[in-house]
Image 1 (spheres, one colour):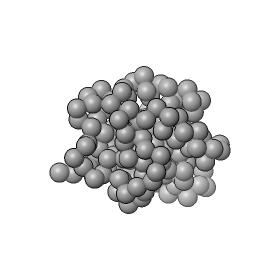
Image 2: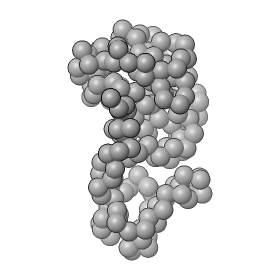
Image 3: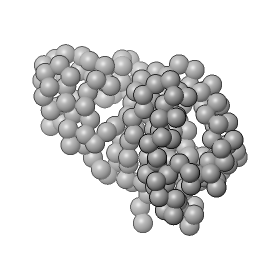
Image 4: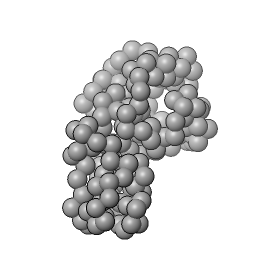
Length: 178
């Protein structure tokens, strides 16, 4: 069996005071018994927070929570990251200026990843636009903050809305298959 993730990513490249936001969100999630307070080896590659009994209230199909898996936690990212779809790939990247699909052209995320810019240069029209103005299908996320749920079933929309309100910004929902 392979792993999959759901990442909730702010629609801003540079989320101000990301570490403070993480502390507040983590306290909120622990208080609702959604995740355990202690770090553990429940994600791939990094330490995370294992899910707890309250997780059943924020997913659409609680019977699919990964009780039998070792990889079943929440990973919180606070460094500039491209949250991509893994093996799900990318079908379209639509420029907000010329509305062309640039997926088959030479586009470069390296300047964004390295923090030189928050923009992406369209290889067709030559216009630089904020990376969040592009349409990525399936959805990708670009931020210095992200909440990745490992092997969890689909999250309830009302949970996503509540997290958006707590962070005071829109979120991208990025599904990944590894």
